[in-house]
Length: 385
Ligand code: UD1
Ligand code: UDP
Image (cartoon, rainbow, N blue to C red; front, side, top):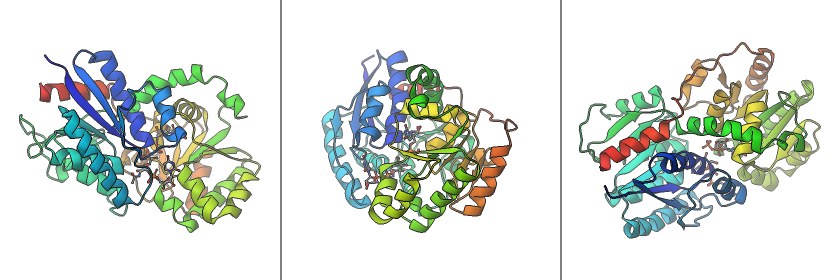
């Protein structure tokens, strides 16, 4: 059998991390059958949002980088589509792999489907049912341009069926006769694989950061609804500062540049106040191994990130989600994740509840067996034979 060409499209931090699970599974199980091509749109370009992951996670390095950078949605997505179209025509892949819900995902879905390349969407079927989120539009449009859709949870699989995808389509699969699969989550594959390595390779990281196991709260904030709305951002940050003082516990915030830019540009007084606060530690984004170690050793996680919510569950930590809704509803139903929006009262009461609940919480396995990437690649090979 001739080797099949699988073209990955990545652009933003979480996609690079997700692609590492696929890269690793190719290296370990499909090196003789799959030839991997990596296209980076350049949506994320700072070293700590991009290069650090290629170096640390041993991902197939980008064969192409479109370097589109930051721009308004329309311009950014259009530049990606235009660049991707050229590469797809030149590379003529057997299949195109897309991850998640960013503008890079949408651009890949449009460029590849219009050129009639089979699109594989990993993390298909997730829905927040809030179309004000750019990610929700990206997800829906990408799913409906795909030929193979890998849903990471039962809920995501059901969402696809509710939108008319049929679970019993027979091959040959096409964009008009797509195949939906329930698989695990490739992010769980990664967390299982890297959890031990994080402990050994980053053994001195906590000490460098002056942090002690179990004695800090990990916080990430980057969602546009929070960064671009000062009232929300201020409510969140001032509530966290006051909790840190009341409970005399350090809050560590590896902040996305979007959040820092927003604070620097329009609200430097708040940034100064936080920078001078005794128990608040604002740091640059960290590498995946460092993040994994922080997640494993913190007491609680507070985030608006999709990925960090799940990692919180993987490492058995309660989580406050700074949003009105989540795509990972099983976590909320399980009682270990709470939607607190940007509401000071909800943040405070839920924080107190989780802070005092010790080890009473349980964290069942919702996300597969750590072999989702292998399963996905096996099914792709079956389709393209
Ligand atoms: C994007 C995704 C979001 C995902 C997040 C992961 C979309 C619509 N959003 O959001 O779903 O959760 O990535 O982190 O695709 N910036 C830098 N350096 C960089 C990249 C961005 O400073 O390397 C700053 C710029 O000011 C830029 C802003 O961050 O304008 C937003 O970047 P963008 O890629 O548009 O969206 P994210 O908020 O990162
Ligand atoms: N992450 C990281 N360093 C950080 C913050 C996050 O490596 O400083 C990782 C995190 O562990 C997770 C992924 O980035 O795997 C989540 O990405 P992000 O929060 O940017 O996006 P989302 O998941 O919300 O789309």
